[in-house]
Length: 555
Image (cartoon, rainbow, N blue to C red; front, side, top):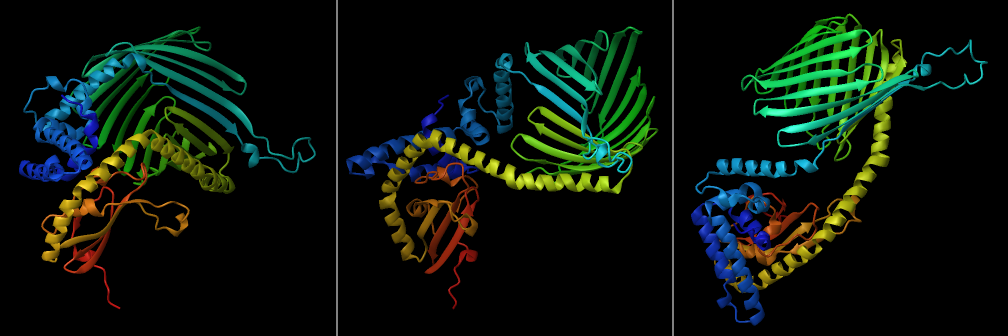
C-alpha cells in the first residue's frame, strides 16, 4: 500500500470536504477539482506546471478515499494508519469495525517488538513532618530556655521506594523493587524481585522473592484469574522468615462488576493482621464513591468516601471521607488539581480522635509520587483546622499566579517555537502550494462570481483565516491571518457554502499561518444584496448563508 507522504495536505483537504460523504458526492467533488486543476485549462507554462502537479496529487488522494478499505483506515487513523506495516495482508471487504480491530492488532505487534527497550519506573518518596510545636507548645514555663522562642519543626520519618519493570518476552516481565524507611532515628530497608507471567487472556501469575535487614527472606506467590466476564479473583500467599520462625500469610480478593460503573469487592486476609473486608466502589465521569466495612485484628472500621470530578481543563477533584472504628474516628477532606501536563498537586486535612489534626500534601509527577504528611496537633484545635484548610489554599493560589502560570506560559511558548522551527520548511511548501492553487482558481472564481451576481446569490467579499486578537489585554500579541477570499468563493455552489467539522488548514488554497495556536475563520459575504458576517472556530462546521449572520444597518 502506498504511504503517500507527499499528499497529506490534499488528503486532509479531501477529508475535510468529503468526510461522511457518499460515493456520488465524492465523485462530484473529485470531478470539480479535476476541472479546476486540469493542465489543459492553463496556457501559461508556470501555471500549467503547477496545475499538473496539483492534478496528480488530487488523483492520488481520490485513489485513497475511493477505496473502501483505505478510506476507512484514513477516516479512523489518518496518515499514521496508512503508514503502518502489515495492511497489505489484510483481507479486502473489511468493515470499519473490523479494520479498527486489525489496526489494534498490528499496533500490539509493534509494541511487542519494542518490549526490550521499555521499562516502567515507579517511585514514592514520603517525608513525615512533626509540626505539633506550632500549636501545642508551653509558652510560660519554658520561655527562658535557650532556643524556645521559635517552634521546633522536625522530620520524624522518611520512606523511599522504587520499582522498575523489564519485559523479557511478550508474556514474561521481571520486576525489581526496593525501599528504605526510617522513623525517629531507627530504620531499615528491603529489596524484592518478582517474575510475572501472563498465562492466558484470563490470568497471570507472579513469583516474589525478598530480603531485608529488619526481616528475613520472603517468598510469595500471586495469582490473578478472570472467572467470568464480570468477575475476577486475586490471591496472594507469602512465607516470611524471621528469628521468631516462619510467619505465613494469605490474602484473597473476589471482585464482581455490579454494573457498568460499580465494582464490589470481598477480601479475606489471614496472618499477622487477619481481617475480612467488603467494599463497593462506584466510579463515573463526574464522581467516585466508596463504602467499606472491615472486621479484623487489630482494626475494625467502617468507611464512606466521595469524590467529585469537575469537568475542567485542570481536572479538579474535591473529596471527603469519614472513617470510624476501634482506633477512633477520622474525618478527611481535600482537593487535587492538575498543575502541568504530567503533574497533579493535592492536599487533604485529616481530623481525628485521638489522632488530632494533620495536613497531607501529595504531588504526582508522571509515575513518581511525593507525599508530605504534616502532623499539626494531637488535639482538636480550631486554629489548627483553620490554618490547615486556609494555608494551602492561599499558598496554592499565590504559587499558581506567580510561579506556575508564568512557567507554563513560557513552556508553551518554547514548544510553539520548536514546532514552528520543525515545520517551517513544510509550512513554506504548503504556502507555496496554496498560492499556486489560488492562481489556478482565478478564472473559475470569476465565472462563479458572474453566475452568483446574475441571481443575487452568494458573493464572498472578504475572508480571513488565522489568529485574531480581540481581547484588549492581549494587544501585544501579533495578528496572524491570511486572505482566503478566493478559495472560499471557489467552494461556493448554488449560492451555498458548506464546511464540515475539520481543520480548515487543509482546504484547497489554505495553509496554517500560526502553527499550534488557536485559529478562526472570519467571513464577510453578500447575499441578496445584503452584507453578512460570521466568525467560526477552526474545527467548527460552517454553513452560509444564514439569517443570523446578517449585519443590522438600521440607524
